[in-house]
Every structure is written in structure tokens, then in C-alpha cells.
Length: 267
Image 1 (cartoon, one colour):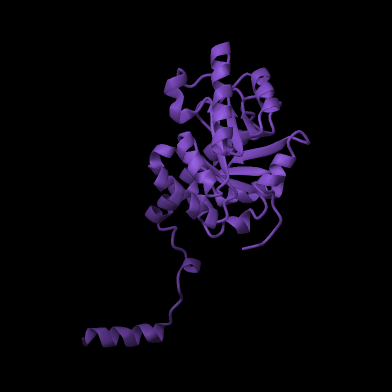
Image 2 (cartoon, rainbow, N blue to C red):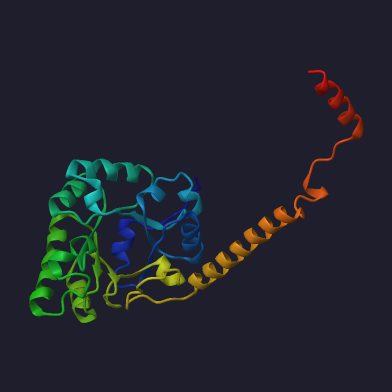
């Protein structure tokens, strides 16, 4: 594993207000390497990718935050064991949308925790589904209360998702947390998008806050058409006898063939 300088929690907190940082959700080693080479500051990753021994060779300097739905992890004790395993694998922090008691337990053990406020997909039933949060005074107050609860529990950062930019900016200005915007405007400390949206690989719903920079879906469709065509040509060559050609086989000699035939006839 390459040893390179990468951002620390302290660095992120010092950088607040100095410049906007970039963050992507990446799912593969290729995407992690591309984020590294492109100068992305932070990445969110599936735990299985964080545990891959090749991850830090691919992305030695990105600040990596593994995360998963807390329902899949289990109790607070399960979460602590999960987090320690990821930190041992060189995670810089862990994402946790579980309750503040779990976050406090992690923080007490010195594990940097990034929480989540606003639209929290795993808890969207409490805020009316997959829609903006904080558009009314009452819901904006609730987002602020979520932030204060994370501060009190010892989190160092929070993803703030689909909250009106004016509200998110005011919250960021008043909070001690490193605020990561997903659709919450430029007044936060970092801007976060999913790689699939940036690459145009998402063939389903594209969120309003996403920005598409490439069209991987069309390229994948083109490659699938080419794959089908190549498979079809191979099948046709097999049926017609065009495959295999002499160049596709191992050459033999007639003398060895005759001796083999003589031997096998006597078996």
C-alpha cells in the first residue's frame, strides 16, 4: 500500500470557509482511482470496497468515508465492531445515520463520524418521503435540531440532503460540523454527488441537484449492442465451420498421429 499525505479530520475543519471541497460516491476500484487522479477530495464508498486491500493503491490520498444503511449493520455494538474493522482498513471516517447514542459511542472510541440530516433516505417516512426537507419553518427548525444533536453526540461532519440553500447556508454558518451538501446549495463546506449521476450511467431517475457530465448509459448501450453482435458472429462462424481456423488450433505432426493411432487401436 502506498503511503501518501491525505486530508485529516483536522484538515477538513480548518478548511471550512476557505474553499469548497468535492465529494463523490464511488462503487469500484476504477472509480476510486479516477477520483484520486481527478483530484476529488472525499469519497463515500461501500464497506466492501474499503476492505479491498487494493483500495489504497488505487486511491491513496482521498478522504474515504465508508457507509451503509444502518439497518443492515445492526445494534450499536455491531456498529462499533463494523467501524473498527473499517478504520483498520484505512477508512478516514464512517458514515452513520443511526441514533445519536450510536454516534456518541463511536465518537467516544475516537472514531470520526459523519451523520446525516435533512432528507435521510433510510428515514424518509418520517419526513414525507423522498422530497425536500426544511421548506417550512417547522421542518427547518427540525433540521437545525438534528444538527445540534449530532454536535452533542460528537460527530465531526454531516451530510445535509435536499434542504433549501438559504437554510443550509445559515445552518452551516452556525454549526461546528463540516457540512456536506447533497442538493443543499453552495453555502456548505463540500459538494457531494453520486458517480453514476456525474457519469450519466444512471438510467433511472436523475435527481434535480445532480449534474451529468458524460453519457455512460449510451456508451454502455452501444457496447451491449457490440457484445450481442460479436456473440452472434461467433455463433454463426461455429455453425458454418469458419471457426476454428488453422491459426486457432495447435499444430500436430502426421508421424505422432500415426503412432498414436497404432497405440490406441491396441488398447
